[in-house]
Amino acid sequence: MAVKQAANGTWLTQFRCKDRFGKEIHKCKRGFATAEEAQAWESDFIASAGCTMSMTFEEFVEVYEWDVRPRLREHTWMQKKYMIDGKIMPYFKNYRMSEIRSIDIVRWQNGLMKPGANDGKSYSETYLRTVNNQLNAILNHAARYYGLHPNPVVRTSKMGSKNAKELNFWTKDEYLKFSEELMDKPRIFLAFEILYWTGIREGEMLALTPSDFNLRKCTLRIDKSYQRLHGEDVVTDPKTPKSIRTIKMSQFLVDEASDYLSRHPEIGPNDRIFPLTKYCLSRSMQSGCNKSGVKKIRIHDLRHSHVSLLINMGFSALAIADRLGHESADITYRYAHLFPSVQDDMAKALNQRGREF
Image (cartoon, rainbow, N blue to C red; front, side, top):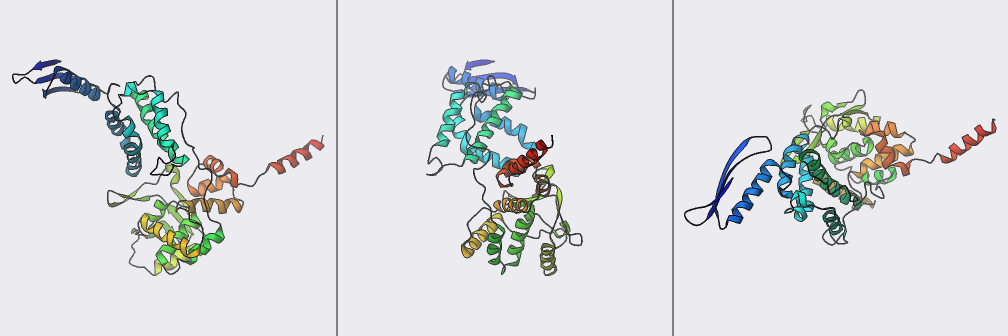
């Protein structure tokens, strides 16, 4: 390593180092006004190339992306990147990884938790938890694979909440009132029928093709998901391996799907039945709510509505989870307040058993 003054009075640095893959790099950089500037640039480059924790947070996020992105769906990474760039990077950008303290994380949390932090509104508890988890993921990655010590997240508490305080959903009567307003739009009507009566995800519905339906057996195969990425339609694997499943459909829904497909012979076996955008669905939902007078909910809340319907019909968490492509523990935890209480029945059974002795 050498910092030297050039003939024109400026300073240069010339050195060799190894990158994070062990490859040797020869670097020469000229034009610095002072020796200190040249030395600082050299130190920063070596920290970045070798992934030492002297590198900045911004530089480490590039390393994190290199390591993590190949393991994620493109849409998932885009969501993470949007969150990192918008909510984390502005605060931590110029911090050196080794200099991030627990109190820095607390102060960052406090800024996001302030009333009005979201353009005059407050962020939801679940969104705050999601952003917090993303920062933790970056710092934990640095600690696990690149020697960050101490890990500043260890002594901090998470902000926000894992689950929303209240789930929004429609009762069956509310949905039927809403769907009546869509009957003059067959494609939109069938899209919402499938969402409500099967509980599949919006992306799963938008990826459906005629070949996914077995109308004779009244089944629907879910094995892909639709996303709009970089201005292009992309069909990917579903959210999780558990999401690949076959759903049994009610006869009236089979009849509706069969009637629609018979009226559209131009739709090939592997063509998308619903060449719609998520924006189009959201706009149709808002219009239907306005016309029917039912409360406004999100499209994803139709999935909650389906779960609520099945719970009221007496189905178990295990059966519902299998239909939705979830783990049963997730259903039990998230929808526990919707399941009928069995405490009275337990007490009565125990009381009866106690009298037998």
